[in-house]
Structures are given as structure tokens and as C-alpha cells.
Amino acid sequence: MAIRNILTVETENAFLHKKCRPVEKFDRRLAVLLDDMAETLHRANGVGLAAIQVGVLRRVVVIDVGDGTGVRELVNPVIVERGGEQESMEGCLSIPGKWGMTKRPQHVKVRAQDRNGKFFEYEGEGLLATASCHEIDHLDGVLFLSHVTRMLTPEELQKLSARKGE
Image (cartoon, rainbow, N blue to C red; front, side, top):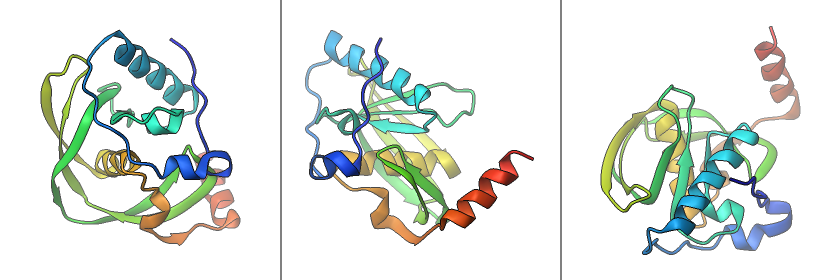
């Protein structure tokens, strides 16, 4: 496994807006990509990572919301159901240091394939719903900024990180 470089809007803005192609080959290269993405995600202390963020234009996502279920690997994911609405603080590994309030579905159902091509579905609420939407948006070249209702100021971010340290 290897840590991959995460592309940022400062250096790769145009690339991050490209649409990813479906995965057709479920082979060793895909397995290596998924393993590398999971390691990169954990090293960056993130919640989700899409392949486009590491320079690969394939419909591949890893998500780990810290709920004890581990890393979810999503190949060719599609949101098949959405419900409710939530407003929450959102950031992105490709937009370091920027956080905003977004409105996303409270509940989603996602259909995807695993690293072997087998289809599965899961349902998510709260953070998992937000992360699923955020990462699947990346696959279509959409950044979380298009969902922001208000960007958080540096002062607000400082207060929030001070509270975490209490």
C-alpha cells in the first residue's frame, strides 16, 4: 500500500471538475487503488476520498465515518434514494482549510459494487449520508462548494477547534 498525493483546487482545479468513468475491470490494479485510497484517507484524517482526488478518473470512493464499520469501498456508486434534509459543517481534503455549512439529504440509499464487482446496497443517515453525497458528487466533478449555504470564517473555525480541545 502507498500514500497517494491528494490533488487540491489550488493546483488541479480543472482536473477536479472532470467526470469519472465507470470501472469495468475488477482486477489487481483496482484492489491496489482501493488499498492506497484507504491508507491515504486515514493518513489525511479524512472521512471520504474519491479516486479523482488522487488523480484517477474512475468511479471509486472510500468512506470511513468512524462508526466502527471500517472503510466502505464503493465502486460505480449511485444514490438510489434520498430523504429529509440536514444542515451540517462540511470540508474537503481537496480544499484544505475551507469549511462551510451545507444542506444535504438526511438519509440516502446507495447502490455500488465491491472490489470484486459484486453489487450491494447500504443506507446511511447523518454523516454517512453527507459523506456519501459528497464523494459521489466528486465523481461527477462537483465540489462541496456548490452546496455551501455559508462559508465559515477563520474565527468560527478557531472557536470550533478550541471546543474540541476542551
